Image 1 (tube, rainbow, N blue to C red):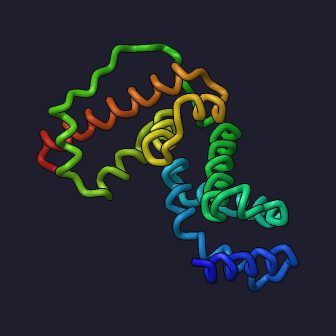
Image 2: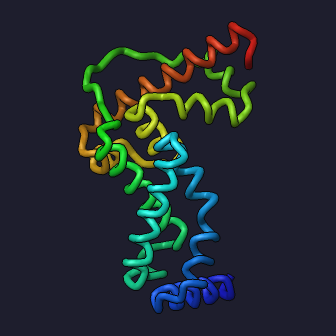
Amino acid sequence: MKELILNEEKLIERCVEKDRHAQESLYNQFYSDLYLIAMRYLSDHHEAEDAIILSFTKVFKNLRKFNFQGKGSLGKWIRTILINEAIRLLKKRRQLHFNDEVHQLKLENSEANGLEQMQAADIFRMIEQLPAGYRTVFNLHVVEGFSHKEIAALLKVSESTSKTQLKKARNSLMNRINQEKAYGTV
């Protein structure tokens, strides 16, 4: 483990010194994971690529400030930059809309069993098809583990809006699952 950290520290040093091979190595090390994360938020290959490029621009610009003791893992720091960049792109392109209307939405426990029978690719496809607001809150809360308070601060919405968007996302996903079960595609 110590050797991995030393290698990562050396890589960071070389990236800070603008060594193109080191920068390419860091980029290649994280690209696949970041692409999957970007696609969860943006649902478009070109937008995901834009988010990754913009994120790495910020990573390389701020890498000298990265501190192993204070920031946690390099990967988590880079993922956080990417998530923020994806959200910024959604807002810039006016794709991130929230409806503050609170509806009573229930997720039946018996319906949750439909998820167990589905393949990950099917679930990912359904999440990808959610409206940007639902998809963003769903990913932040369910996949990334952010609290509603953190999501509210990040997206500049109320906590109740975050909770409502999550409920609507879950409801929409369950409706799609039930439709696919009814048509025998699951």
